[in-house]
Amino acid sequence: GEGMSVVGDWIYFGIPDANTINKVRTDGSMLQTLATDCLDQEMIYVAGDYLFYKEYMRASASEMNTYLTKMDLRTGKTERVLDDAYVFWGIGDHLYYYSGDGDQTTYCMDFNGNLLQPKEMRLSSDCAKR
Image (tube, rainbow, N blue to C red; front, side, top):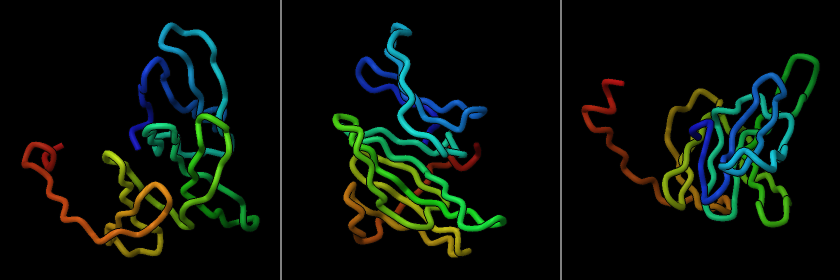
């Protein structure tokens, strides 16, 4: 997730104080709220007709559950694709993630939540220095 994505004539972004994910046309018109209960607006990814984001639900007074949620931008329909999505990011038509259980193994899945064979990921020396 990058926190902001520009796709076609739309900019997708989070508003931290409101805990929302929104979209607005590149000319500044048609501001719309797409999702609420999004405490981590840096974790959004837009690809094709889908918006992926981290959704939070209170499990108890002291616990929060996190889910990777997929929204169809044509219909607004949402679907949970993954429980316990601690960190995720998208590259092309794949999502990479690791869960919050302390396991730092990177997993790869398609947009429907199907786990794919792990793909080797290498950072260039320039990326590793950032």
